[in-house]
Structure formats: C-alpha cells, structure tokens
Length: 348
Image (tube, rainbow, N blue to C red):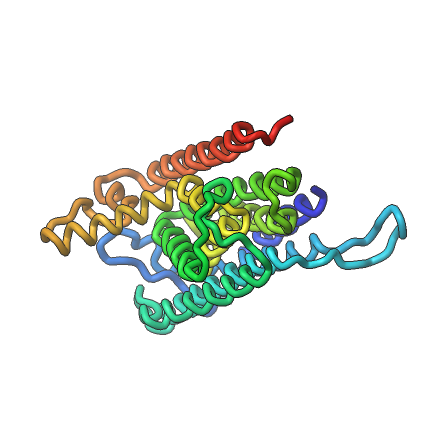
C-alpha cells in the first residue's frame, strides 16, 4: 500500500510541477498543435503538444521511487531495491513502446507543420514489434493465454495470443488517441480508467487464491502512477488547455491500459471500463462504413465528440458529459468485477 501511495504521489507532483517547464520549452521551440480545418479550434493552434513526454517521465520516476526501500523493521535505515517483477516490466514495454511510436508521430507532424504523422505502414510495423515483444515476454513468463473477462473463460488462444495482444494494444492506443480531441477529455477519462485498474490489480493481489495471478502489486503500483500522472497533467490540460499530450501521451496511455487488461486477465472487461473509448471508436468505424458504402455520413464529423461540437455544444459541456460516461463505464466495470468475485465464492 505504501508503495502504491508513493508511486501516485511522485507521479502527480512530477507532472504538476514539470508540465509548466515543458510548456515553456515547447513554446520556445515552437512545438505546437496543428488543428483540423473542419473544426473551429483556432484557439488551440500553436498550443504546445507532446506533453505525453512529461507523463511518461513521471510514471518512470514514480515506478523507480516506489521500488526504493530506505527502512525496514529488520535492518533499520538501509537503502535497498524492491525486486522488479516481470508483469510490471511488460506493462512498461507496452507503455514506452506505444508512447515511442506516438512520439515519432508527433515529431513528424511538427516537422511537416501539418496534422499528418507517420505513414500507416511504419506505425503498424512499430505496433507489431511492440506486440510481439510483449506477447513473447508474457508467454515465457507464464501468463494465461485464455480469453478473459474478469477471469479466464476457458478458451485458450495458443499462438493466436500474439494476434490478440496486437489487437488489444493497437485498439486501445487508437481509441484513446481518437478521444484526445478536446481539452482534458483523454486525461480525465484516463485518470478514471487507471483508477479502476488500481482497484482491480490490488484486489487481485489481496486474493491470490481466487485469481492465481502473480505480480499484481507491481501492476497496481504502475496503474497508480499512471492515474496520478494523468490527473497531474489534467491540471494544465483542462480547458483552456495550456498543453496537449499529443500522440505521445494518448498512445502510451492506451497501450498501458491494454497491457494491464492482458496481465490482470480482464481482457474483455477493458471494453466496459473504457466504454467512452469504445463509443468514440465505434463512431469512427460507423462513419467510414456509411460513407464508403452509401456515400452518406451518419455524424456531422467523427469521432463523435466533434459531431456535438459542430452541433453547437460548448467544449466544456461535451468534456464534462463525456467524463460522466467514462465514470459510469468504470463504475459498471468495477461492479461486474466485484460481482464475479462474490458470485463465484471469493467471500467466505
């Protein structure tokens, strides 16, 4: 518990204090946001982007500090390191790997001075590489390759597990990226989802006989760091945003969500916890299918938050209402998680 609280505190204050430094740095070098012409976001043009770098740094620092031990009952004051466990390192592979792809994407946009990043084939190649490394590490560590909801469902994917990892990593990263279009929307909803994973991972740690998963505390520490880093970043990212997380942040957060779901055996529960991201992604898919199939658009613009913008909803109204959707999704997901625990003999 102390390690979790330490991790959250370090991550929160790191983003809170370092983000203004990043804002000044990016402004001096004119590293700013390039907007879509279809939406009136002139006030966002030139706002510093790539703030995800601060989030990533804060999480790494928090993770390291949480593994430091300065005192124990046996030895008194004595500096040692807590053991780094494989599940935590695997989450970092997804977090840093997807964040790295996002960073290159942002860098490409800045250098080209337009809202276009890496070519799709290079982005996909990077995602395949990250997914392959993650799947190899997970399988060798002995992670369950069954499809799961709150626990394994008994359907073993075998070698298809690597494909499943790729689908979850890319799906979650792109979903968070779609959502990152309004001030504070991705950071606020991400705070809620990672908060849910803190509860899930710590609950599994406290009930190993029921879940049979090792390394849950490590994942709870990381989830706490990501929750707090997103919250600290939100302080500066809320409307009117002084900085954007960019693809660096959205891809990293999405990859971490998928990794936590894979390692806590809550693959499909992620769909419920991230209900807002599913809604945003489905709106994009439906828009593409409708336009290519029938030449008509279902929404004025996709993702769906832009649809409401064009309809005249104030940005703050959309963000708060979408936060409510994210909160309800998290509440439903945690309810299902705890309901499974109660129903199948977790108590007594």
